[in-house]
Length: 180
Image (cartoon, rainbow, N blue to C red; front, side, top):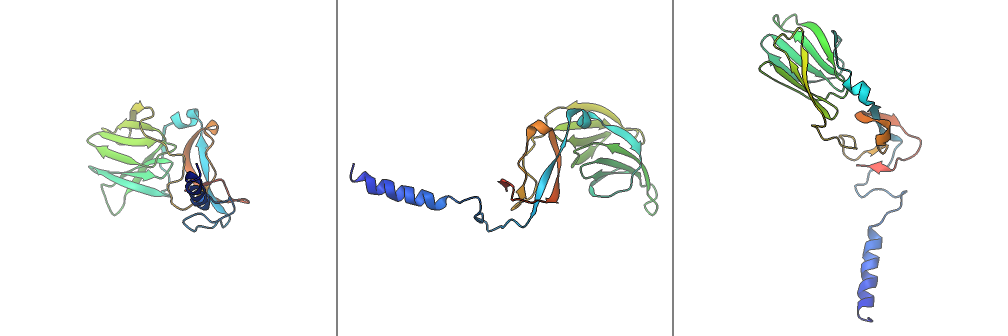
């Protein structure tokens, strides 16, 4: 017993040196400077509300897919623009597929694939002017409970508030409990 006591004390000393208090700087050296990310939530009903609407201005475009004379442009977190590019010098914004929580798209043949938070949506775009939702595959996409950034503070996720559809950088009065 006497021989193991020094080893036990040494182990406890080493482990206690790895612990930090909430006010200390994280291991990577990032200090909290009053900014952090807050999750944006949506209810199940809001997520299932997918609509084809009139064209909208591009504000935060993401991926672009070309299919024949049409462009499909992802609007980060909002949906997909459908643009007639028959005349590349004068493209015409035709319509918008409103998809909350949409950050990624792919197109092949007559099909457009789009994420809708955790669901995968499949649209028939054989007539790109009038796309039709053909299938919803529920929970096909894993959802992370943290923002897609490194070395950031963020408000911890509360799944009771709904599904995360985005993150908003905001001023925070106090350092949040979550860090990535």
